[in-house]
Length: 413
Image (cartoon, rainbow, N blue to C red; front, side):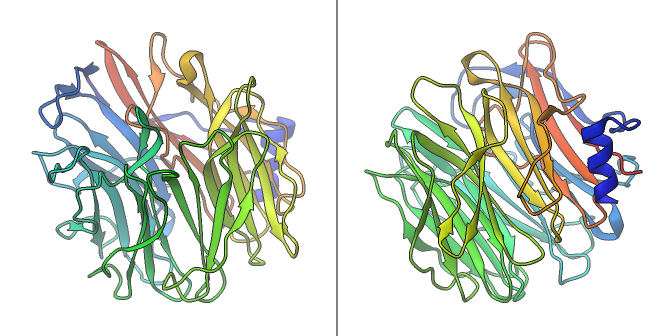
């Protein structure tokens, strides 16, 4: 089925995409930043995962309620009633991640950034909630970080950072691993051995004020292997750091490096059915538009990276189908590097080749607006299942007019 989908998208054999599906709409008010008293009223921060039974799970943020919401949908895109996951109307909730546990029926996890001010210069903590009924209800959120560090922020420079600097993975040994960075530079890991009922105290992995870690990404390998990648700010020649844990995140080995000839940013990891590690990242080379590049780990380290996107692309999202199929999506950037649409390419041979890059139909920003997230572009908008179905979500804001979250589904025939 995945091969047929590739053929349809690459060769144009028949319709390749369903019509887009509206998930949420809202006003378009984004006033000046006044911490949690800001006048924000728009929907944003869309993310998606395949849920139990072949359906979909969609999450987003409503800035008016300051909450993360989750909505189930059928494979055909018919959406059910939304569920308030964060339930924290006093503090903004931003940039969620959805994880469906492959080993525990009905277990769904959400991780997000909560803008809690605890005495530091920057507000932010990392919150987690779990569902054991397929997303119909969620436990009270757990605060995994409880720090003053401005957790969830990935600093590029003192005045520029990306929110949503966090990730979550289920290891093949049954454990959960959460990763995040803070404004002051530390990269933290917390682990759960009991399906999210509790987490370990956070452990610092890397990062400091001189080279602040940002944009962590996780992937599960065979057995208890967990891969972790990140980049750093304050460095125009930053490279991607990749570390392997052989014991479910309890320890990490020596660093592997990828990138070069510019600033490598926003890594995304995937592991294929043979256990091979794949990496995508955005390269910001001096005097050039950013471009998404791809590489894979071999016996001698990472292969030389090659460009997959056209120029003017950043913030890649890489997923696999658990066999040899890969899907790579990215943000197509417009003026001032605001995202205007999503681009996409496929590999059906474990990354040895990719299809010609194409703009995802229906992903474009409305006139006068830009696509989300408004708080940072480190979200996850892409998912694929074992049958080869590809789904993407997006959000957009037209200031003073309106906002929306919507779903795009690839056809397999």
